[in-house]
Length: 356
Ligand SMILES: NC(=O)c1ccc[n+]([C@@H]2O[C@H](COP(=O)([O-])OP(=O)(O)OC[C@H]3O[C@@H](n4cnc5c(N)ncnc54)[C@H](OP(=O)(O)O)[C@@H]3O)[C@@H](O)[C@H]2O)c1
Image (tube, rainbow, N blue to C red; front, side, top):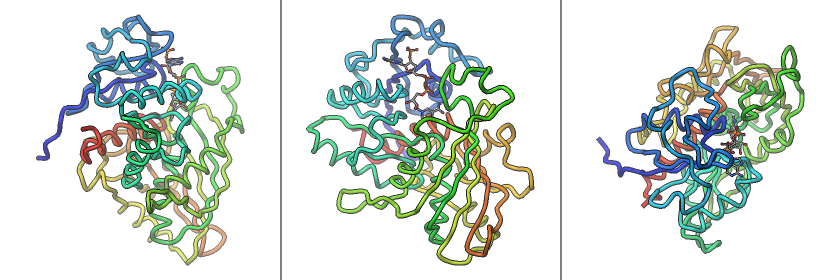
């Protein structure tokens, strides 16, 4: 059994749709202890009274009693890591203040994701990108540093593209998304706009997904990330599903590809978190379903050994010729697409000595 240090964590944006996922996941964690909750309007109130709780399972009673603190470095004194689930406009300044004050920040927000010295982490794909933290500290003169996790839509997509690029040189990806309501935070899209409807536009999302996926899938050499050359076309839609982003992918390759081989390659995909047996790492990051009508958000979003951390893929078939492939993928947007990947990143950081 590997020995872990006990890690004290603080959380910025604890009352939001993503913040609540941390409150749901961290009290069960073997060595990450959520000690401090921080927020904006909720500061000064007990968490249980300030939050509009979104989950059917009961809130951890110790969390409910915690008083939410102001989003300032002094509030997190004594903590080893700060998770941030702040809106991007707020995150840009607040996260930099925490890093400057010496904290390691793991952020869900887009504010710093594309900074050239900030890693954009999916630990199964790019564990080595964490080495950028040293460059960042040196360049910015900070004692702490910021690591980020991707947009919820790009996460499942990048996980599926990684083995397809490595094994069959995927060159082009055309993607259409069907994104859940919780991806817009709480209260999100007005009910009268989304009931009985699909909205074919999510502000800034298409550009973000493509640029982020290229960075995540990029190679790290001589202290710099060289983006993946894969070409991408993305269309984003909001649908009336609560949790779970579904996406159809049409990919083109530099070689012939059989759907059966592709299914085997996807199901075999493993990364550093599986080798290290990190607590939030699912045994199988990609689960392949062979029924014609899977994946489905309601049935598959909590699949896998760590619920919500596996991407579920189905309907794998050739496209217009043997060098193309079509498939459908599903990933849980606030677990694999947000809190779960940030917690996995923190576990990797702990194991690799970044929290000392
Ligand atoms: N939803 C998803 O599926 C998803 C997935 C990946 C990434 N993200 C990203 O994660 C972040 C959070 O998303 P969300 O969906 O959880 O948003 P949300 O539901 O709107 O929650 C925002 C949180 O930020 C806090 N906050 C707002 N203004 C603040 C301020 N000035 N100072 C301190 N705290 C402030 C709020 O706390 P108070 O109530 O105390 O004001 C609330 O807890 C965003 O950057 C989003 O883009 C979301």
